[in-house]
Amino acid sequence: MKYLNVKILSVICIFIMLAALLPYHLASAAPPFQMTPFPTPTPGPDGRILYTVQANDTLLRISLISGVSIDEIRGLNNLAGDNISVGQVLLLGLGGPVISTPSPGPSPTATDVIPTPTKELGTGMICVLLYNDENGNSIRETSELSIPGGAINLNNNLGSVSLTSETVESEDPQCYEDLAEGDYTISVAVPAGFNATTETTYILSLNAGDETYLDFGAQRNSTNDTQSPIPTDDSGKSPLLGIIGGFLLVAGLGLGVFATRMMRAK
Image (cartoon, rainbow, N blue to C red):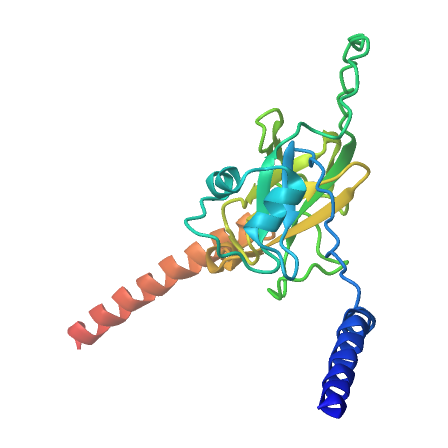
């Protein structure tokens, strides 16, 4: 009996020792408790305080750390329950802009607007030749001269230039100088007896300093080529020859009458 009590006492001592060592073992085996870092949200430029949900976040944890009630978080973000997801951006309130507003300085002094100077238009020259296109190839040869009696008309699109000239016989074109730059219409009228072998109207843009030469061709028509009959020259005839011819004619008539009478007498 005494031996049994000693054995029970030994078992009790072992349990007491195990119970004393158990908390120490648990404390050394379990990792120390670490709280998930909570980034402190700050107001943005528009004054809103935003928070991005991290891993293991709950509405309760966000509410306890931020100081904003769960109901207020739900109301600001239209949440019906407690479900939130990692990466979700939550509005925690309005804190005002963090960007400092510069204080207004003195108003700028108005300055007079300097008008832009108007560009002065330059001038150019246009030379026109209405030539006799003798071979009808619509290309002016050096031997083909100007046709007199035609007309040249020159106008610009603004209506400020309107010139009309009659063509003259010459080797050189008729030139119009100091023309304001712009768009021009040049046309020619061929005189009677000619047919145009090129276009009679041309449109061009004249720039400052330009010297433009235009050739218009025309060819004589068939009516103009008809030759007049060569007149006879009677100035070399002598009046004496006329008298002799008349005498011979009268003598011939007399001989004829005489011969007729002789034949009747027989």
